[in-house]
Image (cartoon, rainbow, N blue to C red; front, side, top):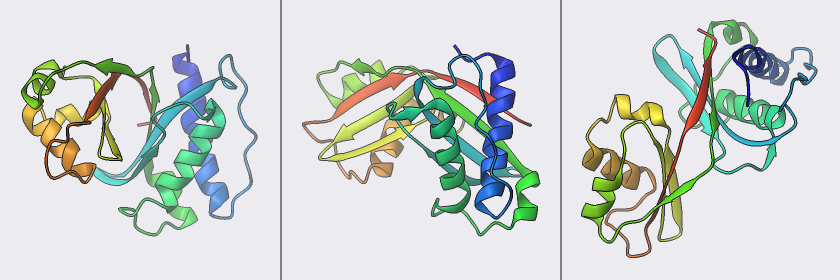
Length: 179
């Protein structure tokens, strides 16, 4: 379990990692219980109220601090929605780190059953026709209707229609924000 004080350290590390990618000094990886455990994370960056970038991993592949560093730099510099950053812009970013919990498969028989099985507040992963997409739990704030939520997630995955091989998974997050 990552403690709130560790979340503060992680958001600072994410900011320092972005600054380092833009020519600043390279930060030392923080040490705290769980820092070297395999975790899946998303890093969301905002400039004011505008999304700058959001990149993450759905399943654990790297240790927590490495995943945060990689996703922070990718969200800052490689998300196609991101505008170019200068080192001076880094201090103005709001940083949100979401630590994903384990995936739990959602069982359903039809698209209607899938919509009924969704629980607002869960992160959702959709897999089908060789594609995959996720919405973090925070997306429910802007898409509160389960049918619209699922339709938007399918669109994000590049699916125009419900596929027979569609799979859904839910997960929770522990979220840390620096602002």
